[in-house]
Length: 113
Length: 107
Image (cartoon, rainbow over all chains, first blue to last red; front, side, top):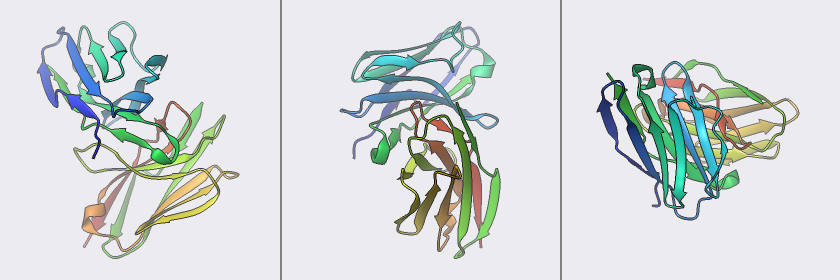
């Protein structure tokens, strides 16, 4: 089965450090999303790309978060500097939409201490 | 913009039928997704409705009424493994999810 691959699976870091999360979308999928999930807020959209072009990153704190898609096989989400309130599970999802749906990666569980 | 509402929690008995409702308000409709998420795991795609009516997939069915901004997910012959969160999302891009309904199946 094709899958969306996210690395790392877990990350513990100290406040103020830079964090980079990576996502390899499924080959051929033209849309890539980054979501953050916490118990309180549920799944929040951070950013998304279509055909590698960023279309919406209004859900991201711009001063510390950045999302890029340097090529069709890699999407990155960076946090610099990280803060304890960034602790969450970060999911990447890719797909074509419609009846095909979107496929989620296994997520990166981030803990900022 | 989009506004999606689902009940926060539901409990049902093994072997029973449960209906999880979702209402949405959107400026432009592009289908309705349902996802299942087990604790500690990623959401997985269950169904997509773009036309009014009921779509059946084994024990799971999904219904849509576009005029009412309403959908439901119907789970039949409940099993313990169906205990999970069920997330509704309106299909405009970007895909925005409701907070999800946590279903507990009890013996």
